[in-house]
Length: 143
Image (cartoon, rainbow, N blue to C red; front, side):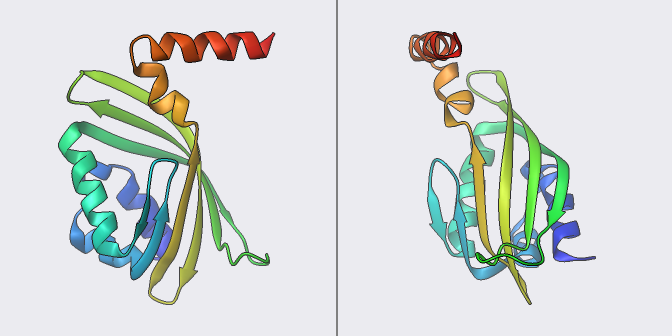
């Protein structure tokens, strides 16, 4: 199984991810970036996922496209598009989110992982008052 195939398999249900799973897809010095935080090293990524899983009943990814990148200036080896379904423990809420991941791969796994998604859609729109305000601003901008 290739690193990308293993990655897609593991991310189907992130709540089941283990340290061993992370070792099969990420290098020890992986850089993991998303709109919330930046993590350097597999141990930091593992702690991040552990914290996420404490607050989630379920976190699943439907990877809709896997696009290999052979030639580019940034060293990106694959671009993924995905739909995440995150079921939170408290408040009991389900969040749906579309996003994109850039991956850079070395011989022993991915050494770079960067997620792009709408942070407002994931967080701000679900906070009372703030969510109302974000939605109102989005509607106004769409006019």
